[in-house]
Image (cartoon, rainbow, N blue to C red; front, side, top):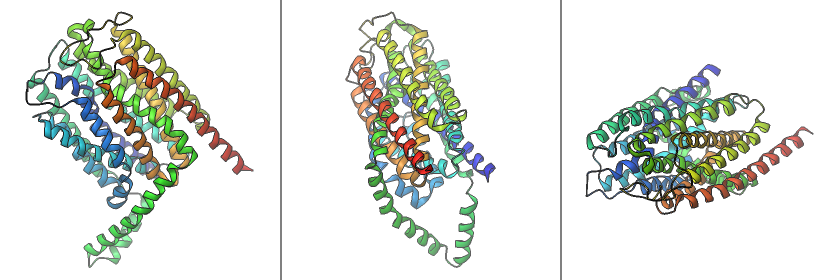
Length: 446
């Protein structure tokens, strides 16, 4: 049983590794690619697309548990992967209508994918292995930041504009990778209890597969209302209310490191012809920070309650250091310039080493917050995993969507200030939520 669970967690991580090698690379470069398009009819914005994705994602999360309950986590992840692949394919022959249509579809797909992932991960974990499995999955997932971005660096280094042939070759490669990740979900194994239930149901329904399907569908549909009521009930709990501030902050910093910071680096005038290639290197270094954080704070942490507060505090500190260095070294107009490089002069001369150090700190801090949010939700809401993870992704993606929409208009200093305020508030609220859980556990022991 343990081997089967470990196999499932590894395959789950590998599938996400492939899909998000394609998607995170796409998100990191799409605004820069759009700036370089030799197509006067295309009027899309990478920031707006990502904002639509996370906006649709946020509200789809409220219904995602019902969909996953009907068709199961395995099929949910497979269908979602197909829609992710469709979004990547749009960049091969871009058009505005298909760009925004697939943005809506991938928002719905992401809700199913992440809700199913959270449920599947908890289903294949126990209290003693949830931290290990979370760290293992997170480390595999964040390897996705390495390979696609390495390709971007090798292909773009020294280029000031992205040619059509370069764009087509990059996104064709990313499409193949995404499809491979999607297919990997088909080899996930059912748990032993599920196989016994399946065999029993099939034995009773040999004469009518359609009857069997209807029985399962009807049972799942009956769970829809109860799942939705559970989401509403959990939204009223003190723990979720406290953690919501931390979840909201994770949305702001997600949008910043995944879509905004790379665009800023690519627009810095002082980096010259190296600027576009540095977008790929920055993505790689963010991924290294994510992997280091996932390994140290997921796989190696044994005392969950103590480590969660310590790791979240560390995440806040490293993010604040990164924000301060970015404030000093990156021009204030870097996120908002279009078809030009930056015009403003930063307080300090931009440095490649400092820019990449900030990339590492952004990735490390993000893994601190996310691994511990997954851990505390998995422990506190082990019996309501799907609605709990749906709430997490709902709050995170609402704030990510808002951040993507304002990223093309607000100067960098204002974006950093918003993250500092919410980051401090979210960390404080996480401490209170963790303390509440410790008190509850202590009372249960007496």
